Image 1: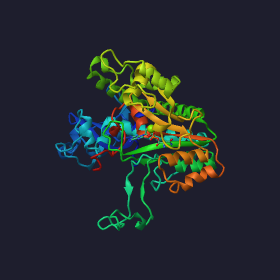
Image 2 (image 1 turned 45 degrees about the vertical axis):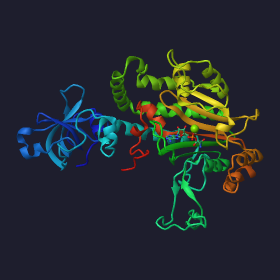
Image 3 (image 1 turned 135 degrees about the horizontal axis):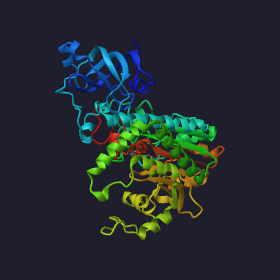
Image 4 (image 1 turned 180 degrees about the horizontal axis):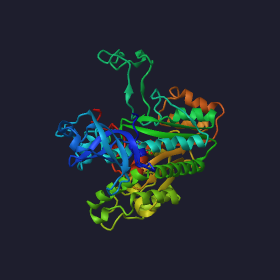
Length: 477
Ligand code: 4AD
Ligand code: MG
């Protein structure tokens, strides 16, 4: 008989006879009660085994982690907290699980231990919930842009362009690296690679996205991006997913409006669809907060925090205003900023970003018009000649969640900028073509998908919101 998902069984409006459920045993109590989970929901369904008529041999094999199939009647449950349970008529063990050896014991495991078992951690409540929320957020991203008439564009993963001009790329090679062809000076001759030149994994689909926006009007990408930055932080991955909309004829302020509307939409969509998972994650967070000293605890519960974002506009400040605020502030009575901003032109450090968001504005903040020399080459130079039309969106507990800008659409200004910082025009000839033929004002941004998942799930380490995190020293799975 076809199985019914646990989620659907629990949502049933009436008892049913002879249903089939399949899943993994979370716990087995008193030789009688199986808590069965099949991943469709955070909730387990209780399966009551007729232990008097079940062979001892079978009962012994009902262990945490085992895969089982049960057939029985869905009846109203006497137990607290569940509407229905299954009175089991027949039970089949599909796959045994050695109770002694199964790493996911029915107890609280540390996040570090779970990271070392990324292939099994998804069988825990927390990771099941996180991965379902992640999936719904991804659906929301497509839903938003499709509703607004954006075209979904798949930009290349292997590319010859360094979109951010930051040099943090993973090289791709189709050469025999045991015996690579070499130039006279001993360096590897990538011309002999079948791509004919050096290639790398993309750091961003923006440049290709711009070319498409210059034909399709409004486009978005949603794909994996790669950064070979050797930073071991709770906010950085070497492989992460980025959403990059690009819109012709939008200026910087349209860009901010779009980003804000988009973020609100996807959070609302997910809050509406993932109530059970988010309530579970909120509970998890409350437990975690209890173990912290009082003054370090978050003032808001997870769902309050999400609702706050839905109900309040993000604060918008220029970089120059932000620097003035920071210069006049001390983050707390005892401590000054470790790194004090005295000079206009310095980049904001994460402690500054946190101060602006968590202490000063107590709200998500959009900082715009950054100094040109700390931002990427493609951002539009403002009339003052020293700032660019950039915008970063900063979120509580996360820091930068979005980076975007109005693009430099003027051919001459762009070429001049590239020359100044030594980007070879020849390498980006195709990008420059977009400015040569029918250039127009346009803007876009990139949202780091995992940082969004962090915010929505209330998790604090980015390694815990992607199935198999890629970080320095971690690519085992
Ligand atoms: O600020 P970034 O580097 O901007 C770009 O790549 C632009 N080309 C985007 C655009 O305008 N189309 O990255 C954008 C966002 C960041 O705000 C952050 O959320 C995320 O991507 N991000 C990372 N997330 C996880 N791990 C990393 N190493 C990340 N680097 C950036
Ligand atoms: Mg950035």
